Image 1 (cartoon, rainbow, N blue to C red):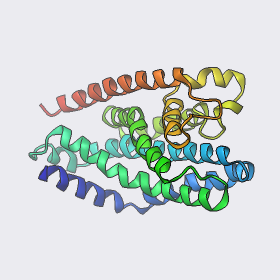
Image 2 (image 1 turned 135 degrees about the horizontal axis):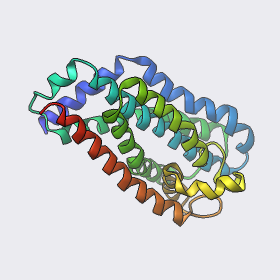
Image 3 (image 1 turned 120 degrees about the vertical axis):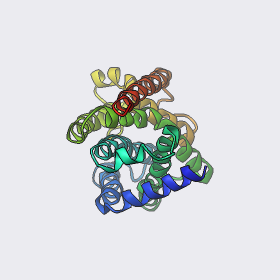
Image 4 (image 1 turned 90 degrees about the horizontal axis):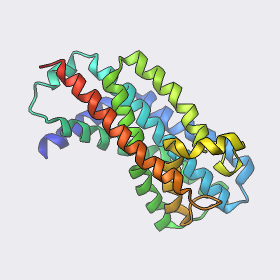
Length: 248
């Protein structure tokens, strides 16, 4: 446990040495809310709640794809990484440390969104539902976090950043993070339940609204989210074992 705490502490300090990481995670979702969501939902309490939840998922997805994906890939290319592998830190402690480091960034990214929604819209789900939504936001992030870990261990830094960028907008749009799923084009609505971000959004909405989205919860999206969880775990494990084999 001491090693886990120490590894988490220094991983967090290492990340904080790059301020642009913090700034981008905080600013991009908040700007998206101000420019795209706020003009359309200020008087609609449910719509405001759904939009805030969706952009919270978007903020957490940025962390999953870039802090895990690009971050791990960059670490692998540094001389510090082989040295860390000689230390008495077990693989699960390194991975858990990275997950724990991500939590403060999720909070830092989501809190400005919550303040904006509370101060500029009629959204008022209540404290307990907000806390439930935050907890489910973390739980729902597992497939994307595992995919990020897989990218980071399988690809060099530049390739991991490119793939993360390629996944970011399609996952966000198809998952209904920019436009509520109910208002997506028919073709996109058909595809939407099969991407991991749609199931993630449905999970968070269950917490903050108690009923899912505007048209209830998509069971298909939840089933597909579980499938992505398995896929992410398999990919992350395979990529990690492949990377470890280089040092045997």
